[in-house]
Each structure stands twice: as structure tokens, then as C-alpha cells.
Image (cartoon, rainbow over all chains, first blue to last red; front, side, top):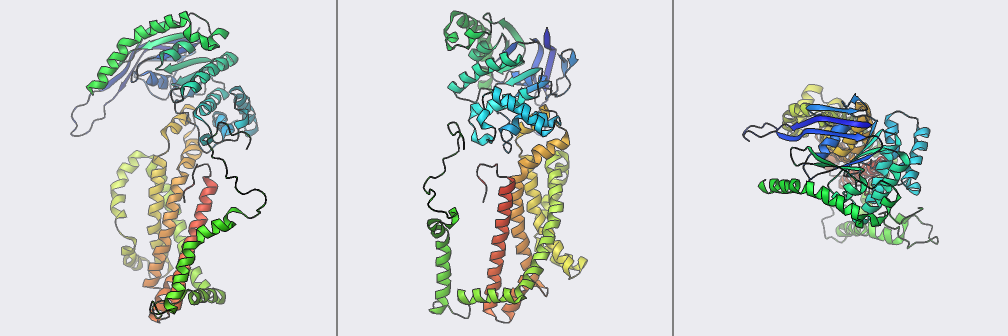
Length: 272
Length: 278
């Protein structure tokens, strides 16, 4: 059963018209994007930088308008932001003057849930992400990995139907990233959330995704969707998974689809 | 502090254990560091006229000035003038707040409004406040009103401009977050924009408080029968050098305490900032 369904989604960025700068081309960021996110799965979208994958996530989040096609969440057309979707941003987006507890409770505060109640709920999710002793800390006292845990707890606290994660682990160091990836798998298993996860890392896409969608470079469209054979079970949590044969086979397959897109992205960079 | 393994907070200096009950700023070493320069300056001030290094009819020794300041305050004479200056400054400052803050928020938030109003604002801003005094006196008379209005005019710029930049420089990711959570525009303002802009706004408040004192002294020196500026001018006319210096010192103390008050307020409201501004 599909939770999110995108049909022929198109997005154009209009060039700003300025006097004297000549005619500028509009940028076609997304064209004919068709994809569905099934209930209970982790769908990862991987693509070269600048391919529009973050734009797509922003559209699903209701933060950016699209100018063609339709996106449905449970058969209801997405027309703006809402608490049925929890967004986790790459830059954490923690509120610097609020402590961990109030940051996690912020989505509930926006809903007008009374303080006692929202703090109780927030505490549950702080426990879930393993930050029990850090409730009173402010964001600048936390490491990058801890900040992203807070952001994940905040997105889960108002119990959305789907987590939208926009390269959430791109800004943390290698070891922290690996721990966060396994933590995310555990959290998703415990909360049974559906996840749409954007990344530029093939490893991450294959490790986390039940399915991996490969996006093309400008205009972004879904080139291929690959089923990750091995299930999201205990063995996927072990670090040895990365050296297993299934993993490297799927990795190769994704890499093959992605290669020409990355070349295109490079060429476009050079031309600029 | 419970755990410190993953935090970036530097450890507190463990140098002074329980044996010293003094607060940190009363530690002899801290006192020495903070007051040495001032002490040397006062000493030079005291000795130069007494030793004849400077003509004593131009510079009165520090002790005489300090004594005049204390007796002036004790007799109520200086208090009266201090109160006159303060009430003008505070009234003008309050008006500046009431005008500069809302205007700053509107300019920072509504791009179209800013584009519309900015050229005019930039033009008016170039007119020095004191240049408008004759105009204000003509329109509002020589009484209190023209003095208060010119302080208001001069002091609101820093508040307005800093509020604009505070609002414009709110982390866009926080605004994106607020939108993704479906915050109403009012909540977005009250819960994100206002607290995020507060540190910058406080910088504006400090600048404009300084400006308010500067303007009131100038205005009182130009005309008026009360206020520290009046004392300054009057003592100069009467060649009462000691009182003149006492008034100058009073102004320095007034500025210093205003700044400390605002810094304390700022730290209270924006204590979340890793390094509070000074």
C-alpha cells in the first residue's frame, strides 16, 4: 500500500528578471517524477548534488510549490506543510535558545498541547534516541550527532505518518554517521515509521533503504528503483553487512545507474 | 553538571576551591587586573595639577572633583539636574522604542515595504539630529517637548536599523522548520523571529542609549535651565572648573551604569548565546 504517491511531478525555478543581465533561462529542476513510498518502508533517493532531490523532499513536505503533476499522502493531495509529515533537515534546525526538552516538544507546542503533556511526550522520544541525561542542555552544548538525534526526536514526537529526511547525516563525521544510521534503523523498527530518505551516498542509500531510487541530474527524474534484497533485520545492523556480497552487488547496480548522472553533474559544474 | 563527555563546554577553572568565599570579581587578582589602568589614570589626574605639570586653573585634581561630585549629589543640587536630564532621556528613549521597534519589525519582515521605504529612510537618516534642533524648537517651542523629541529622533535610528537587521538575519532554516510545523504567522513571530532577533536588537538599544545621553547634553548646553548639560555650560561661564569636571564625571558614570544595566538585561534575555556580547 502506498503512503505517498507522486505522479508526473514537475518543478521549474523561474529565472529572476533583472535589467541589463540579459535573458536568463528558467531551470527545470524536476520533470515527470513518478514514485511511491510504501507504508512501513524506508525509501532512499540517491542522486548527484544539484539533481533536485532535496527540492523533491521540500515539495513532499509542502514547503515548496510544484507546477505540474500531483502528490498524494494517503489519497489526499499535498498542498502545504502539515504535522502528518515530520521533516529532519541536514542543518539540524534546532532552536538555539531552547533546551533539548523544549526543542523536542516544539512541534507539540505548535499544536497547542499543554506544557506538562508535551514535555512528557518529549521525554519518551528523548529516551528513544538515547539522550536521557541531556534534556537541559542547549544545542550549542551538543555534538553534531547529538543535535541530529534531537531533530529526529522532535520529528517523531508529534507522531507523523512519515519521516522526511534530507541528507540528515551529511554534516557529521564518519564514525558518528555509522552509529546514527544503525540508530535510525532501530528507531524505525521500534516506531514502525515510514521514511523518505534523501542522500548522495550510495552506501547510505543501500544500507538504509528497503528500496533505492536513483535520480537523474537536471531535470531530476527517477531513473530506476532497486529493491534491496536483504531485509531490514538484525543482520543489517551488523557492521559486517557492508562487506557482504549482496551489499556490494546492489551497491554496484546503484552505482552503475548513477555514474552517468554524476558525470553529467560534473560536466555542468565545469561549464559554469 | 551531570555528564561532560560529549559536550563542547570548556571546563570551569578549578583553581579556586571552597577556601575562598569571595565572588569571582572580588578576587584580588581580578580586581587588580580590572582597576590598574583606572587607578593609574586617576593618580596621574590627581598629581599632574598638584605638581604643576598641568596648569591647575584648567585641570582640577581628581580628589577635589570627586568631593564636589559627592557634595553636589548630597545637597540635592546635582540630583535635581541629573533627574532633569534622565527624565528627558528616558522619555525620548521610550518613544524611540515605541516607534523604532515596530517600524524595524515591519521593515525587516515585509520586503516590499522595505523596498518602498528604504530610499526615504536612508535619505532622512543622513540628517544629523542636532541639525534639526532649530526646526523642532520652531515647531514645538523651547520647552521640554522639543528636547524630548530630538532625543527620540536621534535615538530611534539605532533601534530601528538593528531591529531590521536582526529580523532579516534570522536563520532561514528556523523559518523553514517553523513552516514545516505549520506555525501560524503570529507564532512564527513570537516564537522564532523575536527571540532570534533579540541579541541584535539589544545592540541597537545600547547604541541608542549612548546616543540619547550625547544628544541631551548637547541640547541642554545649547539652551535650558536644568540638566547636566546646563551645569556643564554654566560652570564653564562662571569659570567653576571643579564643578565642570564633576559634571563630566557624572556623565561618564551615567553612561557606564546605563550600559551595565542594558548588558545585564541582555544577558538575562539572551543568555542562550554562547558568548554574550559586551
